[in-house]
Length: 92
Image (cartoon, rainbow, N blue to C red; front, side):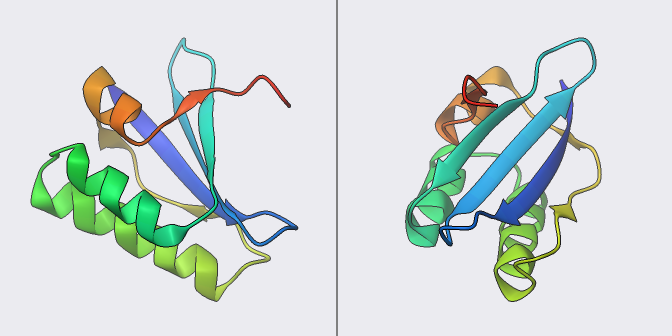
């Protein structure tokens, strides 16, 4: 499925990743540690160019914490979404 990913830094300094796909509710995760997020991306076993795009976007979010960084639309399977711990946002 085609997802648009957004990365930003919460007020507490954590990495928040949000994914939106057509006709599905947004899913998101707050990662307390960037290295854990990077490991989750690697576990997702996606194509190398997709993994690089996602990790670069997360790094840009860390460099510019007041700006939401967006990835272009990226094709992800449900397994890849689950591996990155993206879940329906119950707190918003």
